[in-house]
Image 1: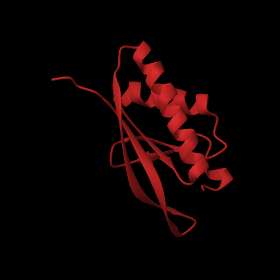
Image 2: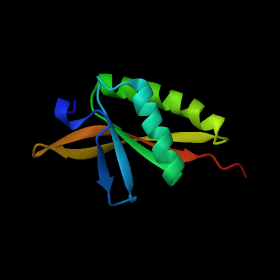
Image 3: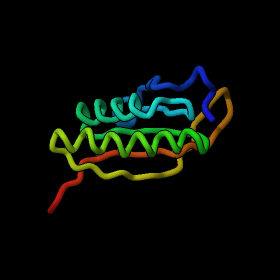
Image 4: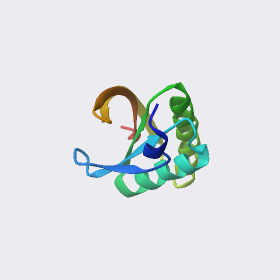
Length: 107
């Protein structure tokens, strides 16, 4: 679980993708996370969300479902990819779940 002062929609600049990574905790408000996901996606056509722990992953999944609805209202159909990633917190390596949101392109 992310330390309490580390989360709640604080974003970290990601040099890899030149965008914000949305970090979610078990106490994050689902609607606020969903709005952040939709906002980052609208700006970058991609969003990344990280969560550590069962409660945080639960909140992230609920936010992803909500954000899909928000983005559908704007005409976007999105898909989600999920993977493990290692993050450093307080000089310790932790395993997080990373969700990636991208636009679905129909061929």
